[in-house]
Image 1: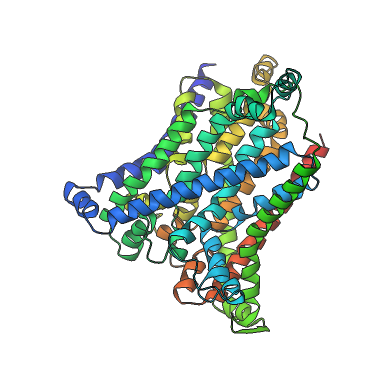
Image 2: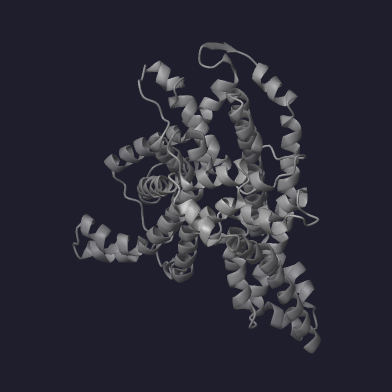
Length: 527
């Protein structure tokens, strides 16, 4: 027994040290680069205050729009009697399968100076600038908010509504008195999550911002363009503020316990008018989601967009001749190794924190979710500063490591919650029968959580395929991931090639999600 306790202690300490080295130490090293003179130099620069104002204002407006669209979409799916709910729900989350910069690129293809719709309707304006950032950010962040609201509405108890209806309480009063209080925690969490996503993203404002500079773009230009890590560290510290605030809100605002006690689900209203409005609204959302992706295809297969619409495969051949196929293979290797490492690490951590119940579990749980509070662009810069000169710097290993840490928190929490629902007495029963814990994990626990393991692997893989933020700081000269080719081609004004790269990332991620869903269905059917 004593040896087992020592083994648990050693494993917990090793994992805690891993996160201290790979998460906390890089951030501390970045913050230590900040000096009073450097701080005043950045804050006092003419670009800083406008960048702060632009970042906050675009993020606030886009967040409000995203939340309103997400609540409305989730309401249509969960509270109306429309058909094709699974199809609509799938299409709504399609934007999560391509980089944020690709959304902005699609808007440029549609509404830019030579955009398809701009030329078709002879529009005078274009999408570049403040409102372009807002629209691109809404496309990028809407799916996250939709998933949050769709999930919470699915598990709302319908008995409260039935009682209110029997008492003759009007529909509007039921909404304001029952639904809104029920959604309050989710609205707060979604607001901070979406706001943080938008304010720390540089893909959309870099592509479509024009003269409207945000803090994330300013940091990218300083750290990547000018290799000024001191100024980048100052801006990174400011970008940490909303991320840390969102992290604290998540800690203080755990998952709504009501979702575990549903005596009767809310029955969708069978109203003809609601169905018509829901179909129209969901269809419009689907069009907005697919329009930028469709613009990629149109651009890639035209001889010269938009002046020569003759079909051609020239741009595909040209992109492949520049190594896109090799870059794609690089990304798939990066993503597969990241998914394997991340899934293994997340499972071990979640098992320790949810099943061992020792004094280190709570501390390890807190350390395990700290990566949620670190934007990718800040994590990338902190890795450059901390690991510079180490054996892994400038190799594929550091890219795999940063991706594993960057996307760790969500899969970890997924498995943590899943393991919490597995019978807590399994290990005790096994111990009384003389069965080693490892055999209980292999033969009992893992078969029960196979679906969650597949989902974790998919999450790591898909996000590693399309991430640009942290990787842009750390990717070695060769082999580079394919997502970085979008920036490269855009800088060279090779828009068709950039569009083709966006398409192949999207196709690979769709295939991976499809295979993942098939595996989970087979696993569910085999139980």
